[in-house]
Image (cartoon, rainbow, N blue to C red; front, side, top):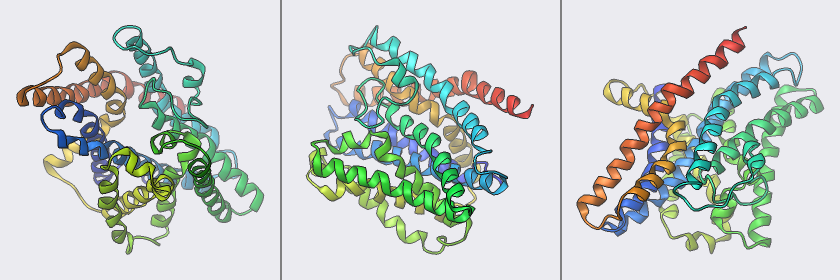
Length: 353
């Protein structure tokens, strides 16, 4: 099975980071384009698309590992090593960059380094304001840690790989849903607070895994296009003011899954589309830089706002917005080329020995 990103998945990953940048960059446009506040949907939608993409890709890897393993747990250490070497070094780099920022140009209390280093800063409580984008990375890393364990224990318990996989997927869809039900009905947490709690959100990635399983077994392909109607529905809701969602019990619990299923259908529906030419080249580069761009975009935004005056003219607003996009992608390309790619080569060299 070939797990390399195909052109369609590159396009989806590029779309995800562009949605995030659209949302964060609106701060430069709002003074003269108040309606740009509607772009807030991009932050929500972009991250949810990232989650589903991760689940779809990682799910296929996990299923392959389970199929080829002789014992339930013998594949886990190698899986953990590859995933953490892909994500952890860049995360730690930007953890220190964010620490530098709060000691220089941003007023922020000093974080709990142990919690941030172990991705436990938002395990069962809302993510701190420090290193705000790290909440979604914590969700991913918690997912990478617990999913192989849940699946392997399920396989050990059932003595059947297929039954164990199905049982573990059900568990990891149900438990976060129940946690959100409890948070919505019995606490005062807002939608955005619930959104950042790791154990409340791992089902968003698991939906990608489920659709990977359905895709592999050819049980969703013909019907996936019907799920695409969920995407514009979610865009409409996510563009609303925060209190609109907070007033709805249903949305606080299920909006995540509605968007996840819509994006999973998008991934499956377009998987065999062959993208070529300039669009292919652009999306391939942006997809390659997407992780670094996600990490660097808020530090770039903060730096621009610190060293420039608030824009008041149309020209200045557009200029600062374009500057934000340009330097985010430029810094992401630099981080990828000089750091991330070298770490990945080192990882592959270790595993080849």
